Length: 299
Image (cartoon, rainbow, N blue to C red; front, side):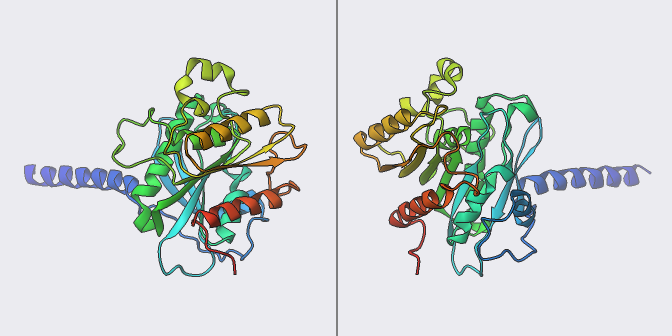
């Protein structure tokens, strides 16, 4: 009887351990089973989500967080660059379908497009600090699992709009990493693509007064990744003057940084995909990434 009881305990323990390991491994990738059209960025966000590989990147007390990965058409013969998008929403709202079209655009240009969900106040009761933690975790996860995902770990572009642009930029700032993560793996992107980003002045004043350590404009130094920013010249939320100042400080520090002025546009100047400024801006951003050797030259 004791022998049978001992074996039962071993079996239960083994099952529990196996389940925990499974949640931390990359075996939970849901492969793309439906063929995605060559031009995908015009599809509705929910449809793009359904066509994505859904990948668990982080377990949090509030909810499991997932990546939604879109692979380019055809089978890749080698690892590819990837872009990871974080949608906007003022750290309060925001969902994957809001800006997945941007990731799909870059997928259509021949690299891997990813959109990362992250915790926000309306759904999870969290603060901007958790948003930053999740952004760093997402980049670190992709870099750790790059080989399995078919991604070049040295060509990871981090992107986002508005508050998503803020947390994307914060992946280049030290601090506020999850303590249980391997901090020898960098959460810093190899390039930044920012749409009307929150940069530390303008929107979010109360947060930046309390947490100046997460104000991107205060932490620019030599070594930031090549960066391209779009911002509406009439933006009242993330002022165009702040984007100009950030660009100037980046260049003065010896970094590569380009600003795309979106004439007379207010906030969310070039997204969603139905926005008339989407194509002109994304084409300029694509050209920037071609010049930085993240996207192959178009034939």
